[in-house]
Length: 280
Image (tube, rainbow, N blue to C red):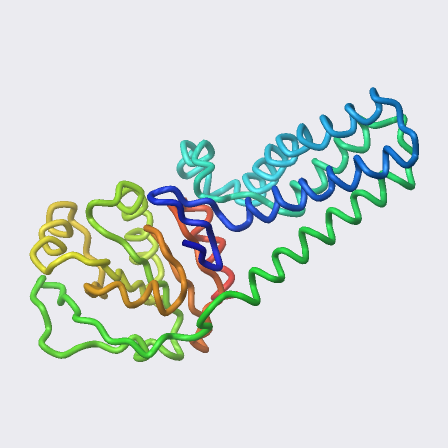
């Protein structure tokens, strides 16, 4: 299954950003090989160019992670172990491109500067086109017209359905989760802390496919006290926003616009970055 954010193969979820990066690199390698043949590069120069492109991926990823950590140093120092949790997608795209480009340039002294600059510009254009296309394909930009059963703080089910559109005009974070999902469980304390620290932001914990007793038992056992806990028993929200896979977190600004979505486990640093975007 393909969504605007990822390719889903069974339980495996490949982020769209990673697929765009790999496709851009593959096209760059193919064009570079063709250019090298026409320019009569030696076999050694061609091989070194191709090898340096793929090694620049690793250099770029390391650089992207380091830049992101530096930009969010305070959040990571509050929980240093999160530095190792690269599944939080905490990478700086600009930082990664700069590090990777610098490595590629340095590793290919035998190639003319003009040619290297052309390859880097082409890669940047391909990458930008991919991300723009991904953004255009994203479905639903506002609170969907859906209603769900809601749990009170006492754990009892309200008889009336609660509409998601009641949060229109208010900063809102919607987390799609399930009690059987390990990354959901790992990020739950982070969401609880943010819920307690930001009373001006509504945190809606929208459970996916589980019954009332299961959800209530999970919250009680782990002592979570979210104000808004709702039950999406039919999986309507993922279909409405075209975001499949758990956990998924949606960030709406005060105008009800879907500003960001994050598929996978959140770290404190990533969550804070998203909160800053919806509440600048």
